[in-house]
Amino acid sequence: MNSSMKRNPPRAGVLFAFEGIDQSGKKTLSALLMERLKQVGIQGEIISFPDYTTPIGRELKFYLAGEREYPPQTRHLLFAANRWERKRDIESWLQGEKVVLANRYVASGVAYGMAHGLEKDWLWNLEEGLPKPDQTFLIDIPPQVSFARKMKERDLYEEQTDLLKRAREAYLDLASEGHWAVLDGTREMESVFSDLFGGVMEILSSRGYKIRPSPRTHP
Ligand code: DGP
Image: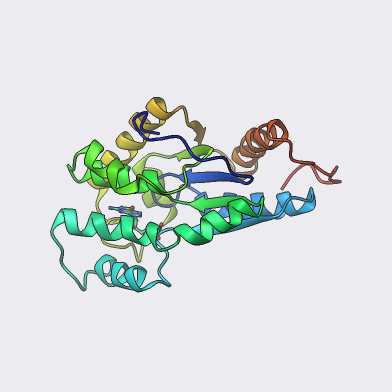
């Protein structure tokens, strides 16, 4: 996270963000995590960005399908605005002591923006004021693994190997700056999940969450 960004105001919940290029496993991992959190008695919500259900999200869907054209800054403003559309929901979940799992969040805007040659500080500024993640997990895979996992029906960005390469590099750069947890997403899902779950439990315990013993130790 950008060190120049102000600290989060006190809040009761915890926000985890999952980042990575397409097909890294973010959605599967966050769904598994939510299931396990419920088993140990923790309430949570999952939110995915882009959120295609909002007015701006619907516009982004047209854009990603190649049906709209925008100058680079305009489209990055739209991606950021889509997160701002859901700010109140995220805040109210956090105030309700929920654990919020975000599939892509502020760092997607910065990583993909950097991959398109935009300035990092300008991109971070678009996200300033949104709730900050307590921890960002980067599920790291190289573009060739992304392509091997999904060969057809890729969106405008997914089709571009060079863009994915630059987005991955930007993510790794942001991860080292922001002290994110980087997980090797090329491994079996169980192994990635086990590391993720360990990291999440450690943070939740340190934040005073009551964790009910669960009979299951694997997804
Ligand atoms: P997804 O629904 O996760 O497959 O995302 C759709 C595409 O949009 C994907 O290729 C990555 C890109 N993307 C996601 N979030 C952002 C963002 O905030 N900014 C930009 N420029 N691209 C994004």
